[in-house]
Length: 281
Image (cartoon, rainbow, N blue to C red; front, side, top):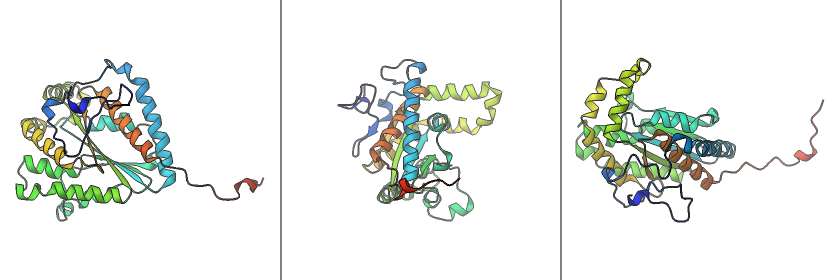
């Protein structure tokens, strides 16, 4: 078991530590994407996952009512890594008024005419809200690096710019949580094949997926550098074993619920004199 997978001292035995501590160096090859701690099947975590979802729903209501702080959740992964599935299974049932999902593809002409953070900053959650980035500002040190869209002297300084950006969000009351959903190359092959085998999933498959898969090692190196350079106290990265979707969902949900609980949002004080009000007929 890797250092990052050890159980946190003093915490329940089912709470593995996947937070990347600032200054540490992660090797994705040394982190087992099949890890599930003591759990063996989906049914082993079903009740625990639902309990975490209830915690998120309750805490989101308080966050929305308080309207002083927000939460930004960043999801990154290799293709088929489970970003969409995580959103579906972790956030199902929460109040849509207080949550927004933003997905980022190749930049539009307008977006490309601004600095690389412009389009992301526009989608940062307002106070009282939860924002989810399905892909994120990290694409500008990942895909642009792997595909050589900009030279190294352009993308490498972006680590520091990203850290400053996230520090600014934190100072403004936006807590930042970042998850890398870690799957194996063999698992990706199975998931791509499943999309080919199921006509209802063909819309999710692109021949470009095969080209991207050929760049697996280059993407792994790019993710490692992004995580190692940009896991900070104010915006930590979590490397989540994600071969087992049910375990991925549990880890992400519990981490989010614990983060919201630590934020401890409070309902605003009631208007004075409510006890004297009588609702007229």
